[in-house]
Image 1 (cartoon, helix red, strand yellow):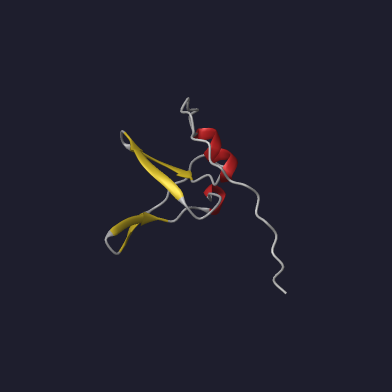
Image 2 (cartoon, one colour; image 1 turned 60 degrees about the horizontal axis):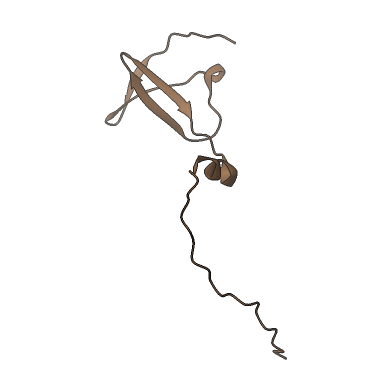
Length: 78
């Protein structure tokens, strides 16, 4: 895969835009863009799901209150 390619910038309404060549396409339909000095860095947004969310949470030493939650009593509805 090519690592560099010359592209032209253009205006799309009030935004500056560029067409991303096929060999540089990103996965998904969202990306994050940030500036690093004179460079723009574009990265796809990773959809990690529940496991990725839980992995980002920090452990807590909080003591949670005990909740009295007995099982539901079956009811005859017919």
